[in-house]
Amino acid sequence: MLVNGKHYRTIWLNPSDDKAVSIIDQTKLPHSFETIDLRSVEDFRRAIKDMWIRGAGLIGATAGYGMYIAALEAGDENFDVDIKKAGEILTATRPTAKNLSWAVERQIKKICDNDFSPAQKRETAKTEAEAIANEDAEFCRKIGENGLEIIREISKKKNGETVNILTHCNAGWLAFTDYGSALSPVYAAKAAGINIHVWVDETRPRNQGASLTAWELGQQNVSHHLIADNCGGHLMQHGLVDMAIVGADRVSLGGDAANKIGTYLKALAAKDNDVPFFVAFPSSTFDFEIFNGVKEIPIEERASEEVRVMSGKNKRGEICDVQICPDSTPAKNWGFDVTPARLITKLITERGVFEPNKAAILKIYPEAKR
Image 1: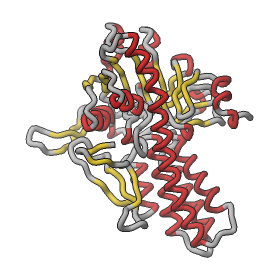
Image 2 (image 1 turned 30 degrees about the vertical axis):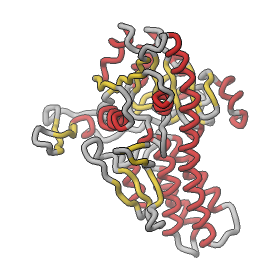
Image 3 (image 1 turned 180 degrees about the horizontal axis):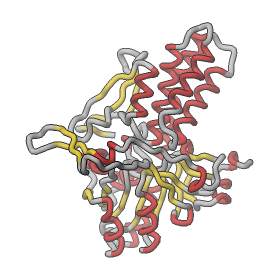
């Protein structure tokens, strides 16, 4: 997508040094656009754990490139052992996003399940990392095409009046290699000339909506307004939301979807006000080993300081941290919640748009049958 008119992906091999992988440092957004090179497995561990990069698809792509760097670091004598240890380190960084373990397992199978020499395995790891990233971008492009038809239909019913779309957190191109999941249909609608407007939840505690979604919508010239997290229900009650669309970090075979904390509450409000609620994600986000997402999807609990402290720009233009609670107040910080399938109107993937239930999922994904 575009940054100041120039096309960027969120992660790429450094063109002048293929032993380094470049990323957009998302901790600096929206006030500064900076890129950084990752050169070691430890760099990749920190990038994922400390959210230099974030978003299900991008976490997967980053893990794929991390395994390539792990292959460069692995010794010839214990190559496969070293690779698998690196995979364990990366997988342990964040437990909820399925794309992470999916990418690591895909790389291990591709690298280790053969009789190649270490040099050949390193080249294989590089090729597969690129394939994972390219596949993520292509799947997200197709999600945009599939979701566009939903927005187009709403636009027709409104006789071309503005389609108001509510989203939560960031599931745009910053969360994937390119295009995004929840925002891919929005960008496709913009390109198709449909009149759209996005309500952007601030998404506390890390404010990905305010910091990331608002920033990238501005870069793509999409009409939007930032709103407080607790505003969505009010907007729905007053007919100011035509549809809600969010991303996902893990989706069960039963159609339950884990996404950024607060998504469940938006789905409840949407259900109460007959607002269609869509979840968009690439196939790599599915976890076909889990049926009941509420009971079985692991929920990451992050540091309490993310709740107690906020970062922003002061009147002097300086970036600073501000504590928002009493010194002695403790905090809890669950990163995700699970929206039950009964609250989801449709799932959108690169394969199409379908009901959030086992039968419909198995029809689209016959390989998931057990």
